[in-house]
Length: 100
Image (cartoon, rainbow, N blue to C red):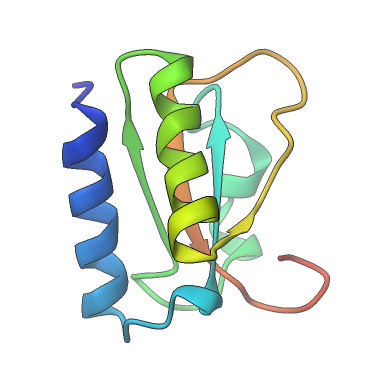
């Protein structure tokens, strides 16, 4: 179920804090759906907390959450939103320099 941008920001921020609190260890992006290849488990670190995503009400809301984390928290942007705009906003723990 979609949630408000402020709730997504609070939830994702809490997830980072529970996972060590180092914002620079994460990247943030948007996606159209959870069937995106980036969500494949074998492309993530072997950790339960390596990926978290939430559904926003609109693609614009998802971009606003992404932009908050990039501008206000210094988290790297994981994508440039190529393709259709998506309502999912996600945080992914960086696993290597090739996968920011």
